[in-house]
Image (tube, rainbow, N blue to C red; front, top):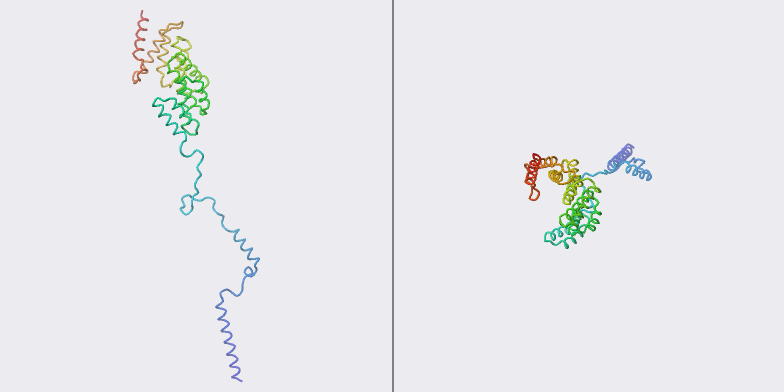
Length: 290
């Protein structure tokens, strides 16, 4: 009987030991959670995890070498100026005294977009002025949108007509200068130059009163004008001339202003009137004494 009891106890102990060994070797805990056993809960858990992910950054540092920076698209007009080549060809032909061929190149440059298109229009206006084609030049000038460049083109036209030298071209130049001082925005340099050009034109024709109006306009309204000495000189010439308002005292005063303002200047050939102004002043001084 004791032997049977002993065998029974031995078998019972062996079963308990094997059971403990199996429990230790299990890869996962025996008691699973509700999420693991219920498929619907797994889906809920996954959707919750997605919602809880940190937001993706919208700004990426351009300095981070791991992140490629998207290339910027080139804006319209980037790159080579399409008006440059024909403009340069026009200048080259003009330097060889081929105005007709140069004008064709300037016309092509003016029709394109680019910073040299406006320069080409200025040169076209100059060329047309030299050929007395003021009507065609006006059409070119009207197409220039920038006010300052438009004023420059108008001045180039008037100057070119003036430089031809004929009576007809100078009269045309007068009309173009007159447009500049009446219908164009005031320009600190070109407006007084236009007034002065008109004054010289009228002085040649002995129209002294309107000529004086333009020189005095320069003296009073443009005190910073670079060529103010010329306004003094021509004012002296006008006051010295034989007309109803001839004034020797004022003529002498303007010659003195001219000589004083150019005393230490180096004047270009053709624009140095110092000797003439001094001779005229001395002659007026003698007349005053007499």
